[in-house]
Amino acid sequence: MIRAIAALGEHHSLERAKFLLNQDFPDIQVIGEAEDSKTALRIIEGLKPDLLLLDLQLPGFGSLETLKQISYQPLLLLMTTGYLPLIAALERNEIEYLLKPISREEFAKTLQRTQQRNQRVQERLLAALRSAEPAPHYLNRFIINHGDALRILPAANVHYIKAAPGGALLGGFAEEFAYPASIEELAEILDPQHFCRIQRDCLVAPARVRKLRRSPWRKYTVQLSDNARTVLRVEHRFLPALQKIIAKR
Image (tube, rainbow, N blue to C red):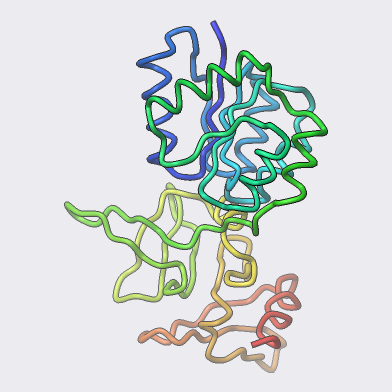
């Protein structure tokens, strides 16, 4: 039995890959999954799979850094979107890859070729990725379960994110929306220029800061530009980073 980990940045791609493996490759068992690079690296190092299905646009610190930090060489099935410089680099170096969205036929062919060619993490692969690494792929929208429907919230519309039991709350709207990820996880996959930590358990969008205030006791708060004019406390250790981003705007 081949043990596999699927590290794909889009949930529907992750579920599609798992389905195809289950249907067409009974000798491959998915033992772990991840939708961001930090989680991927942790479970890859912890479980040491034989096969790694890796999204080359993995959110977080990216696929290249993930591959550089892996301490051994699993078999690799690479997946990517139509990012032309990256595709050109892969083809120039004769590296197998699969384009998303995932087709059943192409998935089977690419996986078989990957196994036949014994494609693993090697300097040739790292050099190809390094030469055409796309910009970091940050989360740019939140998909929220809202009643009987799904609601899509652009990250640019969120004013603040604070920790809550079971995940986080997205604020700046008429109501706060629950999202199933921790502040630590979100800090890894959101653009650090668009979301800045102001407390251990709270992120704020600097573009939504209306005022940065200091009290006579040198306590800092931010007032946001939402309808409620939300006021949040700023811990001193996070103040310099916030001021630096605000100063650029």
